Image (cartoon, rainbow, N blue to C red):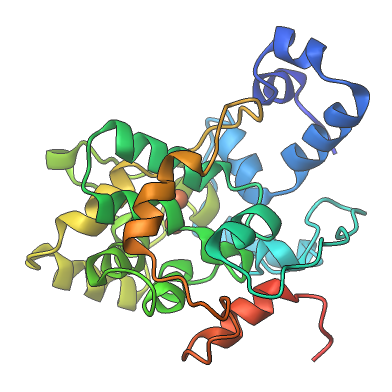
Length: 271
Ligand SMILES: [Fe+2]
Ligand SMILES: [Fe+2]
């Protein structure tokens, strides 16, 4: 595989930052850099966007499917999945962030941007959680995530998480949201969103809560600087106010979605 040195150095935060890393950190950073097809699409500077047919032709070239959850596959050729640290007996949202969702840079940076932009707490929380179900699977991740969080977050937060996925496919100049080049690379430049996505977009256009998922898309921010200071700490008060942590622990609370949390906690279970 060809690795573009400039992209890797940029991913490390520039030449100076890269020089400060020890070799183990560099190896980890390299592994992370190469770990995801999504990351590769994000860092690509190729002016040519594939067609939807070209994207489809790549399916049988992989040993995994693009919708598989991040926890379940090592995407780089020849790479192996890592041992996962055990979860505590009564896991909290913080434990899932620390032990199963990582690296969670994308959602932490999205939430930090939403906070900087002075958005309501329900939306900041939605930004913090919006892509975390990608640990479980990527296909329809907004819908999965909304279901997974519905018992624990405000209704508007779950709504924003669910529909950010559909609104990502539709520009809205009023909010400064453009159709992402990333999607031209991932889906093909002539890709037409699926019927359920188009139907939900039509529904959302006239919905009084349209702005909630739209604001998630506006703050859906990617950065590849592994030295960026990201932490869940700035969001602890918001989580405390708006996330109903079950006292038994997520996955042990017999909620309708407890199995989703258990699956993320123990992805190495054979059955
Ligand atoms: Fe997303
Ligand atoms: Fe996102």
